[in-house]
Figure 1 (cartoon, rainbow, N blue to C red):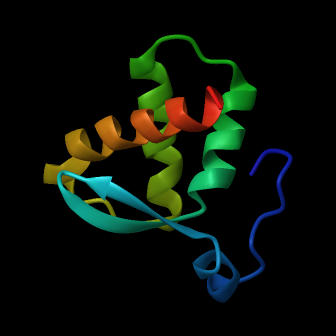
Figure 2 (cartoon, rainbow, N blue to C red):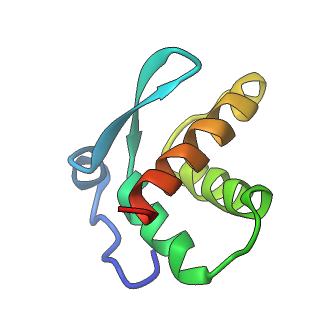
Length: 86
């Protein structure tokens, strides 16, 4: 991913899991910090474009049920904003 090093294997990706609240439930997402860094580096404008880029990349390392995509988008943009505005 971007400037960060991709995990060599599933075990390495699992070490990069961060817990996020999705629709009131704590969910572990692999590679989220790396994904946020990558999307930030693309310099997208508008929450919709950013949320879609985050969701697309998160799906590479995590299973996201179709019915839950909206909740994931909301949570991902919230996590993105927290990290970017620190």
